[in-house]
Length: 138
Image (cartoon, rainbow, N blue to C red):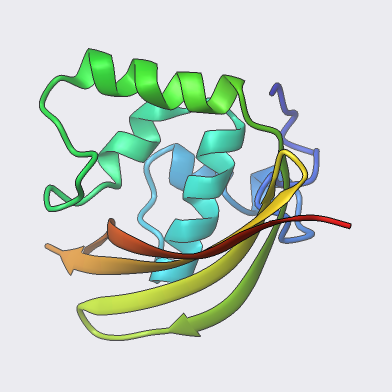
């Protein structure tokens, strides 16, 4: 997906990309886990595997030192997925651990996940997830 800085942000915040996730994709640290989650969703929609990798905690099951293979896997997912919507269902903030429950509309199906984020050296990282349900949109 190609995007102009004046287009709506792929995270479905209602803001322009330049006023939303672009700063994080260029290196700014999201101030909380919900902003990180939104920026990761946008990174998937924009085929930005480097951002996904740089914001993944080493405890995550997908984490690997084989960056090339990891990037290829992310790009394969991106190329086969339509990122059609994102709604934050719940956000539980914390000092070093936070949770974001979200409903993503992917390929016409709702994908509900509760993600755990850990703060390491002042930076939020995606650590793990519990998938709650997947159902087709009507």
